[in-house]
Length: 109
Image (cartoon, rainbow, N blue to C red; front, side):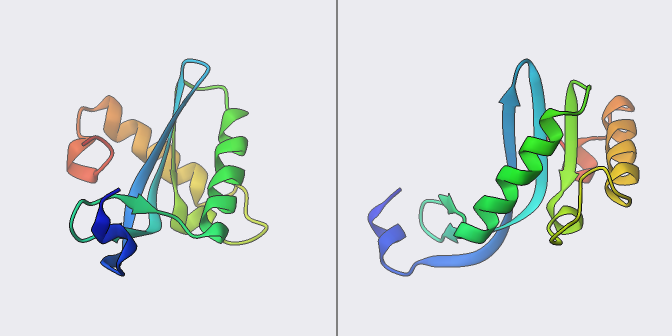
């Protein structure tokens, strides 16, 4: 964080949130955030943080090395990452990664 982070220099944006857990990687894309215009540091609201925690906890139960979840699909209350369209989005993302096209779709930076 920089001094500008505390002076209302943040803009509404989205980011990719990544967690490593037990040799697995969980990627949550398109997460709403506030981003500093100066340093680029990202912060989340309490509601977004709580939903991110739920999404990550659900993804920990998946038996795969990489889980990719689109926050905009999983952000609806009472929606599970196991529900469609998250499962089809996950399959598409994994196919893109396996085909080497992850960068084109924002899956790899």
